[in-house]
Image (cartoon, rainbow, N blue to C red; front, side):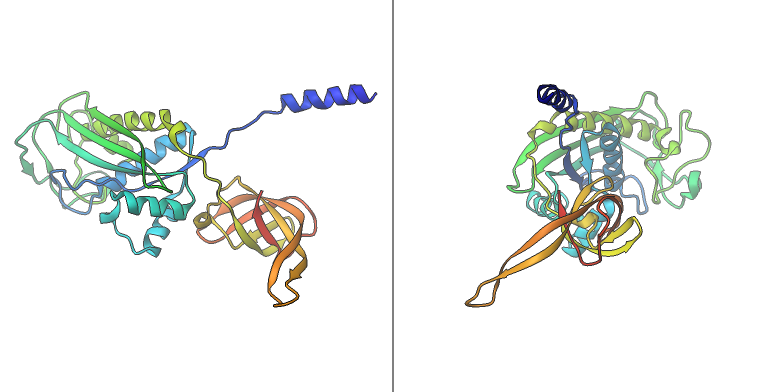
Length: 316
């Protein structure tokens, strides 16, 4: 009987799937300081392309990508601006604060037509209410070239590089020609993830460059070191089977994570000084995170029935 039971347990053990830990990355807005600015308005193509890269990486699933809210919060807390985004030392510092394996910084080296002399004309109106700016009116194929670097957050070392280049499949106006529909874009805050943008020749070239770059980043994921994120917080509220914690995305938590809930059962102090030497705890349950904000998160109790406000929350 014991032999049969042992065999059954061994079979169960070897058939349980093992999931590799996904490596965590954050992506800073791409730098585009060397690009000829042929548009007017507040169009940040560096943020737009970074968002497109995020979408590609999240869709692929190889990496866990830190949400922009957490990244923006760290940037604001450290009083950093977009002018710091290409600096390896600063990028590593941001990545370490976010608890990621690596930070991705990138540059846009080409964003326009292949022609040398580009004329600028005013095309107003357009899809989605974008207007009041100028767009390129010269005919030609659009070309976009970007590059990125994976930076070790502990050493600042460049672990890998990736490049992407895309060209439109047809000639036309940069933002208003060749099958993209009627109307045009101005130079305002253009949504580079929108269908209207993708149908322009510059949108086609941008998407092709981003897809190529993202594939190279995915192919080099083994070069990233594994960093364990240690979460430490407190239970702030309990209502039935739901809890609220005082730690969130800024501390490395994401929806789907599981944390241990522990309670202090004994405090050990130095008899000579009264200083706390250690706190003895016992696990009272586990919580699965269902939603996160910057400094708080919500979750459902997956085990345990006696979780209370003030209990400790630790990484499993």
